[in-house]
Length: 460
Image (cartoon, rainbow, N blue to C red; front, side, top):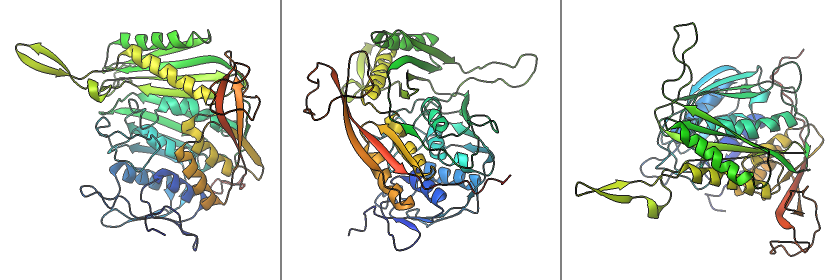
């Protein structure tokens, strides 16, 4: 077997991987939850200029070290090898500063690939990694992150997306549903668009003794769409133009569409009656983004987000204009109307996939299903992403949990449907025999949980 394969060694209790920083956060999370040491080798050894761990990966390790007690982290001199011995999750009040850098010159094709070349990450990247760990601490987690909050939808989720997509999954698994603690929440204190950052996000998560099983296979019909158009340091009319363009697309399908405009300036607002510092405002960089969420009659929430592209394509990078006999190059920026149409299209594509959760949240939902009590959990997913397939292999190695995958096909009419339909028809046809638009094949994933319990929580 080649030395660069990602297959872990099973002779010892240590999880060993030889493919570097692939699935960096996911492997650290499974190490903490399974209480098994982790060894990562060959972390970018071929990078001549910057081998080893990136700054944002080292920052994520520091955040985990603050959240735990007894964690040991060993990194070799070149940063190409990492030894991680998990400790006990604590929770409590934690404040962390995320490194801020330039996202625009280092793009990734896969938003879930942790082994890319991006130099910096947004606060949503850190939050996404903390979500599976937060409910299993000794105390409720109060996490404050400083850094980029918006403008990185191509690579990292925003706090608004996590709030509309991941927090409903918390409720389905029984996190924050009792009267002992308030429900989990994400609050954006200050906006900070890429690349300058300067934003602040607060995340609260209660603790649980154990999570509940899930059974989410019925999609239902879409009944409403809600959204938020966020603008930083640009004219307020741009956010209104994005919202109007989104509603122009969605109103063709259903009438209940409402999009809020969230405009931020650099000045912020002063507290009334006090001489304290200003609150709100935004960071130094301009930005425009939109988040849309569709809710079905079965309580399913599907979200999609996108941010303004400053360079639309390689052919449109520069437009020339003549002024004073000189050529001035101007980068072509995406119009607010185009951003609104693109965001509405992304949401419709997510609905067409037929899953009960977003594609981006597949790996998180499957990991939580492994930790449920020793009972069967089921969930309907759309077409599995490559990141989800690799996650299934990791969960089998770390927890010994194998998922049963059942492929199902369905048809949906023009008014929406429940995902049920006939089987055995030609998959290449875009429409079924009855003239209804075909839904892409969905996958019903089921597994038997390991009965994970929060041993760090004080017994009462």
